[in-house]
Image (tube, rainbow, N blue to C red; front, side):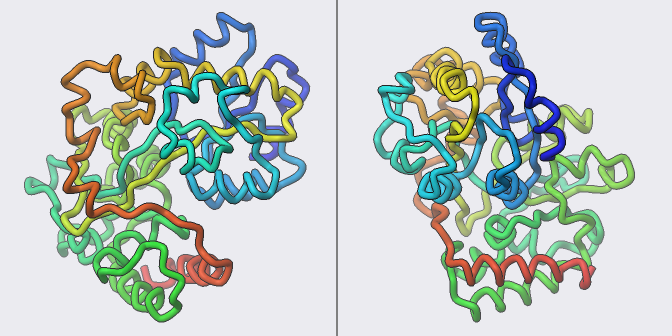
Length: 336
């Protein structure tokens, strides 16, 4: 990934954006380039851990990055991300202070949503209702499950089932979650993020159930060529309510351009178009007002209050907890 970034370093009129795949409307990027003459070079990551490694690498050349709220706080404190407010990103005026605070004033609140279960409705006639359906899958789903090896998200399902905080730092609680993950492992086909693994011709067609994010079902159907087949549910036990922030990297050689792009993405028209194309919720009040009523009322996009009431936000974990979680994840393949 660093090699890709270094390869574009000489292009003064190109901004390097570190982002999830299929996570921004290409038409919006094309309009930006038509207006400014500045290109956007997307570099994809498929886990938060990979993204954080790139951000921590002093040799990587990144102008903008989409990171979670924890990452915005952590890398903001370390001086990796530029502080933002209405003086350098005017469109922030359309975002409530609660959203801006969750990005630690080091990023534009970009998109938000939930974590849940993705499933093929043509294979599973009944929708999953519980995290147990994912962690203790039916025998017919043996080697048809896709999980995710991120040290935060991988623990959401087992900790929710245990009735524990998804942000726990307690070693004994994490070990109990590990036991549940070991029991699930023989049913798991891959621990690669489902958007990436669905495109692997060797295994993509065999994935029937997966851990993922709200909005992923639309990308899966597009990538797999299965319109309407992949669907998404939030389990009854509750879930992670996440927020992604788009930030400018402080050492960017094109910082002024990067801040201008951030303001452009956060503007009502761009934020509304992006949210509508991706079928994901926007934190912008002005953008929300521009969306069709059918989208604003769609609970698959904007979850009901009772779901949000049972949701948890990510909080920063202790170093010891992160290390233990990563050790646990690294062993799971041994139990497949």
